[in-house]
Length: 188
Image (cartoon, rainbow, N blue to C red; front, side, top):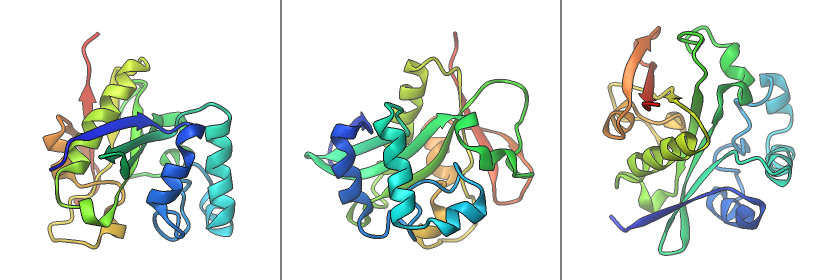
């Protein structure tokens, strides 16, 4: 595995995200807006409108996630932020809050095809958790899949439980057989 570097997505790095996501906006025109919008609105604005919506977030000075680079090339993305940035989580019975603790949520991972199955997700998860801690987070939470069989990449966009475990996350609750809620807790 090549040495990776990680940077918050800022407007100066926007073209790197576009390069990584390609014409499909990572997958099906999502542009990492699925957790931020009501489902009907997200579907209605798939593609260019979702791209513009994410870019507005970045232009406003908010950091919606981290980019991973290998030798200067963008190879991975992790969407992370305070849980309240992702209202779709509040509508999910399976992913309802575990408790009243404030958490940061990791809701999406995207790895460039040539870099998949090389540990990029694990490194990106560690970097994202460190980023959240630097921003004051005490708990970082993820909602990975544990499918029991190999699935195509588009179906594991929330990550795999095995990668979260390797990145130091522990399962705290499971309301669905294949969807654990995992946390990494930082001491104060």
